[in-house]
Image: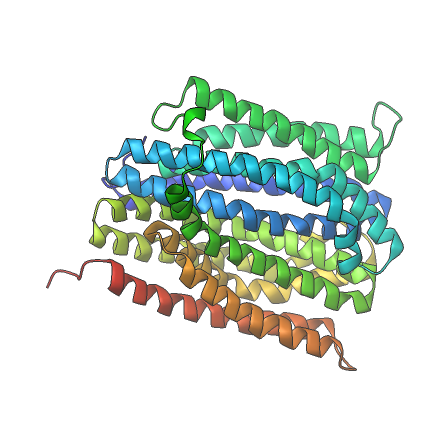
Length: 448
C-alpha cells in the first residue's frame, strides 16, 4: 500500500500516471494489432472487426460499475486506514465479478449476430463482425476480473503489477495475431477468427498471472473466497458508485453506435475510416486519461482522510497537467493526420474519412480532458451521479440531432464532427459546474 495523503501530488502523479499510461496504451495496442493484421483481408473485415470491437464499449460500461466502485471505496478506506473495509470491498467486488463474467459469456454468444445486424447493413461486414465477436467474447468477459483486480491495486496506490501483466498479454497477442490471422509459419489462416482467438489466449494468461500475484505477493487486499458470499449492504455501496459510472460508458457506446449507423449511408469504407480514426484518437487521449485516473486514487485517499484542501489542490494540479498534455497531442493530429491513418489503410476513401475525422474531432481534446478530470474527481469523492448527468446531456444533444441530420438530403460526414465538437464542449462546461457544486457540498469550506 502507498499512502497518497502525504508528499507531493505532482510526484505521486509522475509515478502512477506513466505506469497507468503504459498499461492503457498496451491494451489499446491489442485492438490496433488486430485491426492492423485484419486490414489485409479488406474493408468488410476492417469494418466488421471495428464494429464488433465497439461492443467493448458496452462491456466496459459494465466493468466500470465494479472497477469504479472498487477503486473509490478502497481508496477511501485506505485514507481512513481501514484495511478490513478495503479487503471486504475487494472480495465483494470479486464475487460480483464472477457473476458478471458468466452472464457476459452467455449473453455475448447469444446476441453477437443480432448486434452486428443492428449496426451494419452489409452482409460481409455482419459475417466478419459476428465471427470475430464470438472468438473475442472471452476477452470481454474476463475484463471484469482484470479491471477489478487492477482497480483494487490502484486504490492502494500500486499500479506496477497490473502494467507488467498487461505488457505480457500484449506481447503474447502480438506474437499470436499474425500466426493465427494470416497463417504465418503454419499455413493455416483463420482470418478474423484468429484475431479474436489471439486476444483470448493472451488475456487468459494475463488473468492467471494476476491471480498468482494476489495469492503470493499482495497483502493489503487479499483474495478470500469466504468473503465472496453476497452482502447486500456492500453490493449497494459498490453499485451505488459504480452504476452511474457504468452508465457513462454505456452512453459512449450508444453514441459510437449512432455515429456508426449514420455513416452507414456512405458505405463500408466510411465506417472503416471512422473506426480507424476513432481508435487513433483514443490513443491520443491515453496520456490525459492516465493522469486523470491517478488523480482519482489520490483524491479518494485524501477524501477518506478528511483532507479537503488536498482534494481541491489535486483537482487544480491535474486539470493543468491534463490540459497541457491535450494541447500538446492536438498539434500532431492537426498537422499530420495522414501519417497516422495511412499506417492502417491504403484505400483512398477510407483514408480520406479517417483523416477528416482525426483533424476535426481532435479539436475536442482539451474539452475531453476536462471531462476526464471531472469524472475521476467524482469517483474519488464517491459520487458519480453527476457524471451520468453530463454524459446524458451530451447523448441527447449529439445523437438525436445526428439521427435527424443523417436522414436529411445533403448530409455530409463533417456535419457529424461539427456536432461532436459542440456537444463535447457543452459537456465539459456542465462537468465543471457540477464538480463545483459537489466540492461545496462534500468538502469542508476553505480556511478563511
